[in-house]
Length: 289
Image (cartoon, rainbow, N blue to C red):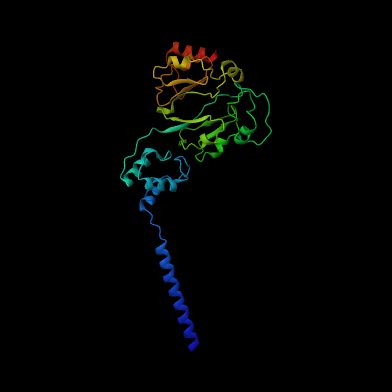
């Protein structure tokens, strides 16, 4: 082996060793310690990255929990109480139990109840349509029907009904991530407490016009008459801006409000048919009125 080759090998080896030492020192100097609990919390999460927790993905949620060392105002809607209990164990904290939620579309303005008065020929998205006009009907508060809520759902839990022109939620698939709530420019979708057998009683209307104009735009619009509020014994119903609202956290599903609604704006879902003939006739008469 020639002397020049030996020198070359020695020089290259020296440079390599020097570079390794420099890189090591730089790595030590700029090393950022990461709490191992971040990885443990992230692993316990469902990896849905839906943003329903209010953070940009499961990783960001895990980092926030470890950084704050608190579960206050933090909840994973996809994993629910089971996942939050696992995280609480990792963190040595206590997780607050929360009732599961599901999305509800507060509009019953079907083609039958809310006929079209003109056609929209712009971009077929609710977001764009809402910026340009009030809708294809005389109700400026109703569903625009272009399905933005369906597009943003990562869980296949909401679809447009071609017959009614309205979105429908599959309660068994809905994880209450809130993506559809954010996507609706008309604020028609809300997250409500899940009741036994997915039973619901809610006002399917967001029209804040007075009775006459509201009823003219949609035959099943809430007119803010207050009859449901007077009937409720649990203070679950309030009237504001000519519109009734039923608080799912207070509602006892007694169903006494629906029969007194003169416009059938209150929807009852997933209940068995009434056994009492008198009650059945009353509900039938109210529905036909």
